[in-house]
Length: 315
Image 1 (cartoon, rainbow, N blue to C red):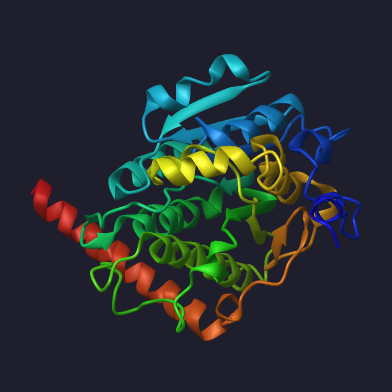
Image 2: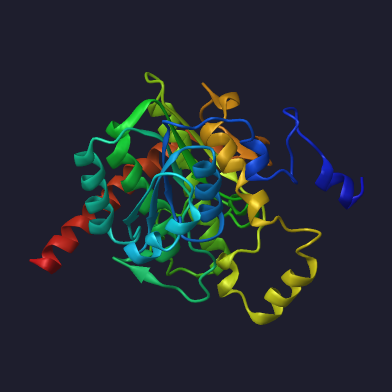
């Protein structure tokens, strides 16, 4: 099968690699729906916000600073509410949650889109490797804080990555190395955080069993966004050469998370992993129920430890 035929291939629902966020939401009326998106100010988050707003949704957009969140206001068609939420700062996450809960807003979807990727050197915050802290722990806190703010059929969409397969450790989650200090590798650390995203999504789905909420994870594809800013110039140059053939555009990359978050096709589907708007098989580790439960429990302990440390520092 040629590369072109692979890129044009459609899944069982008629959608595939080349479909855009506008394609997959065509003819959807999202008036009256409220969607929260993290990392809203650029890349996939911005395109997701733009398209869902175009279809009538109210968008609550979270970015690291209020200025960043406000910067996209002119691009959105309908109601937009920007908020600051620095996912690597627990107090920022808690403040955001408190504001939303006090507003009594009901969320139809939360899209955990924000992330950092392949930091060239080990960076830690509160003793936790920064990619894991931002990509997983920050979203873990945010989502758990907003469960009571979900509408009756609320959806959680967690943006994971095929990196959870390609760069995963042989034994999965590194429960003895959340600091990242043992043989740090930028790509493995990123894949580690993306595996955590998937395990969180699956465990959340299991905890939703007695509710009408659903939780699913997505791989958006390989996209040339500012996530690549940490790669060296040679790699970035190579990416520019092949991107028209091999990489998705931002418009295509946002398609799967838009589809999973708002399309009627997904009603009642939970605990799944999607790529190119169709079901995809995740790694063996991502399906490990024991690992997902253990990660949940340890994540709670990490959050508790960070909050106590922060209170002591602010003391």
